[in-house]
Amino acid sequence: MGRTILRNIDQNGERYLLLVFYTLVVAVIGVEVIRRFVLSFSSIWGEEIARFAFIYLTWIGASAGVKNRSHIRIDVIYTWVPDRHHVWLYVLADAATMCFAVVALYYSLIPIITSINFDNVTAGLRINRSFFLFAVPLGFSMTMARVVQNLVRDIKDHKVGRPVFRGKKLFQ
Image 1 (tube, rainbow, N blue to C red):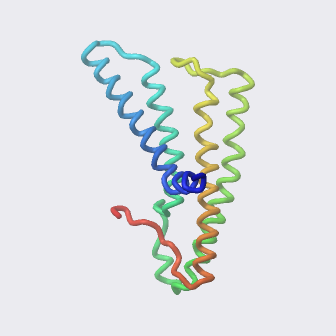
Image 2: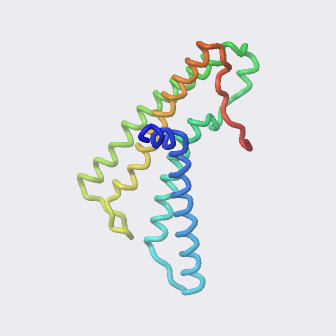
Image 3: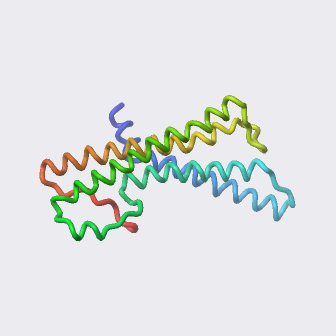
């Protein structure tokens, strides 16, 4: 049972989180539009929740993009290189992504530590800002995990002679 849960999280974790945050953004903005134009009243907390949910949505979406290889890339290079060597282009790209993610993860922790040390709170919700700033290192951590999975999959595929996973198409 534990393996089934972990497999489900691995396959659909980002999708579930994206659904939750997207629904939250749409619901809060919808309520705020009704409150503003029907009741002539709006709240500062609604705007904050929508903004911070959108930030989480963005960083979790980055991880999903790495997992599915649906992020922007230059595919013309793959037409110049024989298929059997595509794996090395992906390994190079994943290594560069990993380096960037490690550096970005490190620097994204600094504002969180500062926010905790100085008890920096949001204007409307009065919640410590570090809770919302955590979206960035969470996204980079998830991205790093997906890069490692991609590397392992690509090397295994290459060893057994399968073509490298090129990613999902936009409308697939």
